[in-house]
Image 1 (cartoon, rainbow, N blue to C red):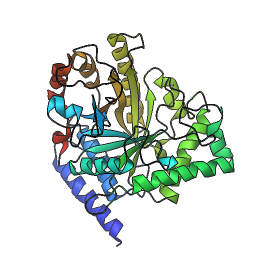
Image 2: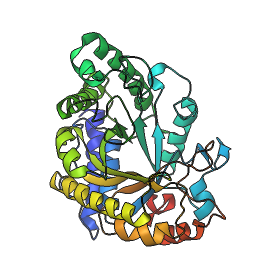
Image 3: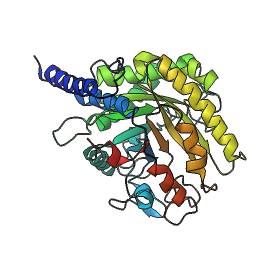
Image 4: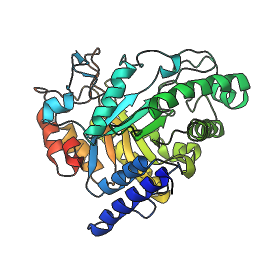
Length: 377
């Protein structure tokens, strides 16, 4: 028996033995991964996500180790840890600009530093989630460049454009596939390409820029290329929609069960949105309800893949608004958006002394809100 098969069976046997002996049962469809050649470590991550669904919701924060309120690349620092005493369980990152061959990503984090963060998170038994705000493959400009109305269709149908896009995927594969643990094995991570396709932000893969069919073909091309051509097998794939219209977008644009492992909902309340906290939470609740039902029907894991109240003007937002909603559902994690280091009002996690800091501590203290220490093996 080959090394891969032996290791796979070992992880599978041990994990299932533990789960059968416990008071709860891992979903029998837990191994229905999109990648049929997923590494043993990736299978183990998926089982961990399944098992933690019974324990609670993992707390996540975008770029948690890289920067925060008035700091940038300070070793060991995290706004979440500063306010509540522990790191988040889930860490969000973006590999935008990897396709350009840049030394740093679209958030100015050097890729070597980013790789070190992922390694550190893995040592803590935390989980990394990657988005990819890729440059427009037609124009070479940013992800927000929509000067060509049919960039997605060109990736699918135009050989020269597709070649450029696949060259970008080569760099994605090189980075994600070479994230290694102490034993030299690829670190399993969650990959969420083409994030925000139904948001108000203009992106070349937005629903306003392509048909549902073309979007799904772009997704399938990406997954198939990474798995079959680049031999990258350490990824769980997450697809997400925004909460304002999930019932229309999700069934139409969902790439299919063979290409997705996690289904997410995104919902942000920005300071200029003119929407009250109650309205925001009602919309989030309706969105989560639809997504969790859709995920259960398709035997996938549900999560809140991007959320938060910019500036946190409501001091009891976390315990009185957010928690009563998310605690009703089986969600793998809730990932709060970043605390920008260079935008004073763009933050979603309070820091010590903020009017919402005590409420955030209260939120994190609930037994079903899991931080990094809570999910350690």
